[in-house]
Amino acid sequence: MNLTCNISPDIARYLKTESDGSLDLREKAMLIYPAIADLTISHGTAAELLGIPKWDLIELYANMGIPYVNQTWDEVEQDIKNIEIAMQKSAEREAKRA
Picture (tube, rainbow, N blue to C red):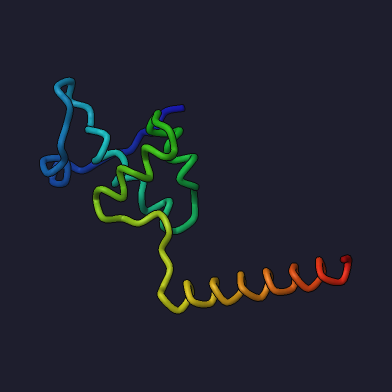
């Protein structure tokens, strides 16, 4: 699978390239990121386009300050409450079976 995009010369001069003139991995990853952010493609698909494992891409973005999980603190707290409720219901079902 190949990813091709046209970049204006005005922008191209700011991009880092490899010795063969191709964009370096970080630059390619940043060009793909908007499609991940708007849920057009997944991290897995982006990693395939870049020819690297998904977890390497996640780590690459993390090193650039882009989190894999992007939640507000309120969302995290709600997730915790949901897990606690699910665990309590599971324990209650187990207690009824015993």
